[in-house]
Image (tube, rainbow, N blue to C red; front, side):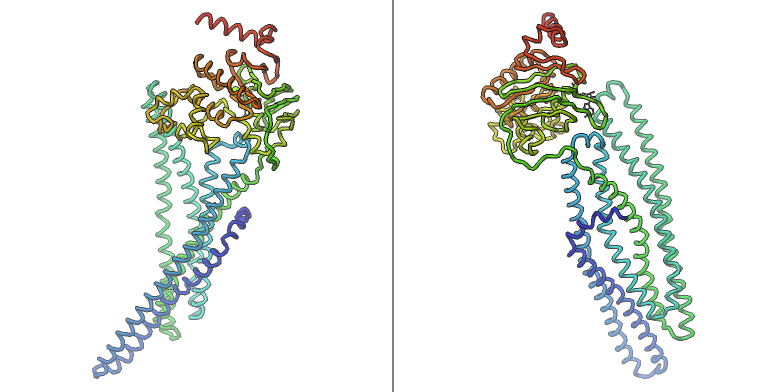
Length: 597
Ligand SMILES: Nc1ncnc2c1ncn2[C@@H]1O[C@H](COP(=O)(O)OP(=O)(O)O)[C@@H](O)[C@H]1O
Ligand SMILES: [Mg+2]
C-alpha cells in the first residue's frame, strides 16, 4: 500500500479534479436516495387513500378521489425521473473529473518513466530485458491507473453512499437496518475472495497469451528457417499445444466467473427477503408502513453495488500496489553515467587515453586493460584485433556510453567526464557495430541526428557513405521505408546508411566500428577516399575506424592492435608490418588471399 504514496504528488497536481469529483459523487448519491423516499410516500399515500376509499365506497366522492390520486401519482413518478436525471448528470461530472484525473496522471507517469528510462545507461539495458521494461511501461502503468481512476472513484462512492444510505435507514428503523445488513459484509468478503481467484487465473491466461504471441511472432519472423527445414507441421503442433493450454486456462476462469453473479444475486435476495419478512411483521405490529418496506428494498439494492465494488476495489488496489512497487524500483535506479551541466563545446578532436581500464559492471569482464594512446586532430586511428578483444568496448568509451573504471580519457585536453551530455555527444558521430535502422524512411534514418538537415545534406552524406546510387535505384528513393514494411536492405547497405547517419553530423570525432565489413572492396575504397577528404576539409576532426581488413586502416596515422583487452602493438602501417606480431600475421594472410583471388 505504501508504494502507492509515490503517486500522491501526481494526484496533487490534479487536486481540483479530485475535490470536485468527490463533491459530485456525494451529490449523485444524495439524488440516488431520494427516489426511495418518494416511492415510500407514494405507496403510503395510496394505502391511506385506499382506506378512506373503502369507507366512502359507493358515494360520489369516489370520482373526485380518483381525479386526486392519479395526478399526485404522476407527480411522484415525475419526481423520481427528475432525481434519476439529476443523479445521472452528477455521475457524468464525476467521470469527467475523476477518470480524467486518472488519465492525466497516467500520461504524466508514462512520460516520466520514458524520460527516466531513456536517461539510463547501457548497463541498465543489459540488466533489464526489453520485454520486462515494456511490461513496466504498459501493464504496470495501466494497473496503477485503474487504482487512480475506478479505484479512487468507487472508494469515494462506496464510503459516501454507504454512509448516506445507512444513516437514512437507521432513521427509519434501527433494528430492521441491522438485520437486513447482515448478508452484505459476507457478500463483500465473497467478492474479494472470488475476485482474487479470478485475478490469479486471468494473470495466468495473460501470461499464456503473451507466450502465444511471442511464439507466433518468432515463427513468422523465422519463417525462412522453418520452411527450409520443413518444420511447418512441427511448429503447427507446438502452436496447437499452446492454444490448448490457453483454452484450458480460459475455461478454468469461466467456471469461477459463472459462480460470481449467482452468489451476488443470492445474497442480495437474502437481504430483500429479510426486509420483507421482518419488516412485514413490524408492519402488522404497527410502527412501520408498507412504504417503508419498499423503501428498504430500494436501499438494499442501492447498497449492493458499493458492497460489490468494495471487494473488487480491494484487489484492484492490491494489484496497483504491487505494480507501483516495481515502478518505484525502476524510478529509484539512477544512471551511473552522470553528466555535469556544462555547455562548453568540444574544440578539437584530441583524444588521449591514459592507462584506461574498463570492466563491464554486470558481467565483470575486464574488456579494456591499461589502454594508452593519443589521437590528434586531422588524424585517423585504426583499430585491429581478434573478435572479442575489446575494440567495440573501446569505441563505446569515447562517447562515454560507459564510465571508465580507471585511468583517464582526455578530449581536447579536458577530461571526458567534464563535458555536458549534449556538447560531448553532439561532437561525436558514432556508427556502432550492430547497425540499427528505425522502421522509417531512409531519409529520416540518415538525418536522425540532425533533424533539420536539408535534402542536400542527406544526399551529400549518402554520397560520402557510397550508398547514394543504391538509394536512387529504389523506386521511392530517399522516401523508401526501411524494415518490416519496406525494403529489406543487405547488410552492407545498412552499414553504409549507418555511416551516413554518423557523417551527416559533421562530427569532431567520427567513430566507425567495423561498419565496412559487409562492403565490397570497390565500395570500401570509395568510402576510404571520402574519409580522407573529410579529414582535409575538417582539420579539427579525427576518425576512429575499427576493421578486420588491413586495407581499411593502412592509411591511418596510428594503428593500435588489441588482443584480449590489451594494446599489444601500436604504430603506423609501415612500422607494424616490419615488426613481428598480430598485425604482420594478418597482413601476410590477407596478402596471400588477395593473390589467390
Ligand atoms: N554490453 C556488454 N556487457 C558485458 N560484456 C560485454 C558487453 N559487450 C561486450 N562484452 C564483452 O567484452 C569483451 C569485448 O567485447 P567487444 O568490445 O565487443 O570486442 P570486439 O569488438 O573486439 O569484438 C568480450 O568478452 C565481450 O563478451
Ligand atoms: Mg566489435
